[in-house]
Amino acid sequence: MLKIGQGNSVNNRHIISIVQAGNAPAKRMVNNARESGSLVDATAGRKTRSVIVMNSQHIVISSAAPEKLIERMEELR
Image (cartoon, rainbow, N blue to C red; front, side):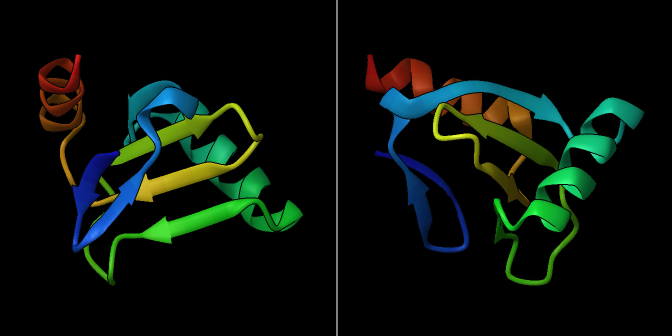
């Protein structure tokens, strides 16, 4: 399991990609997921810094930096 901050974690085997939240395509992904009901908000009210795309078509938003999440994933391997 990959710890994504604020006491939350996701199954690292189901992650397709981790992207920075600030760019327009990531914002569109988050908005589309919110509208379709497939958004998982793991920010605990903090600023969204990363968007995690899961193979289940869910989008998980996290307040942890994408670089930190990628570093944690590499430690799990």
